[in-house]
Length: 173
Image 1: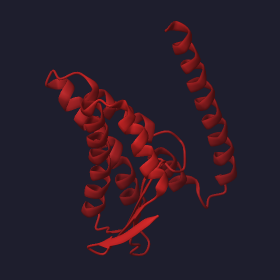
Image 2: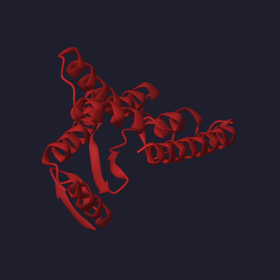
Image 3: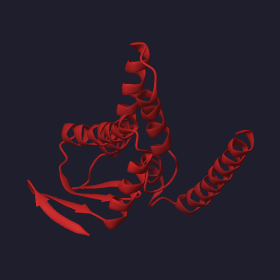
Image 4: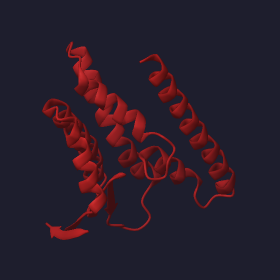
């Protein structure tokens, strides 16, 4: 892992991130690669902007194969609305870009990637924005175990449907 500080923020780059990037570059389509990284940058910029608007500050950013994880400086008891705003700002940025481009009559890969990024990040996995939002309302409550069980079932169903869709796609092509 490579780790360094930039303006008081610790940046970490894990080996898995470098491997993931090598796989992305196998597409060999510079337009697709640029659209992918721009979509990711817009998503993370949405989080950072919302964090700044709510008075928060970044303490570290970790780049890994599973995505980018940002940690903030805790200022005490933060309102749930502030955390919710920060979690939803990334997908909202992607949806805004998608909507603006569609209204402008632009099609292609870039608007589609933004819509996919928003939908993907709202999946109920803890490491994604959707899972973080659910955890915000369930962790530490009497319903935490029930919520975790429901989320496990949802995640399993998502994986099964994705596998079936992939199988269907392979059969058709």
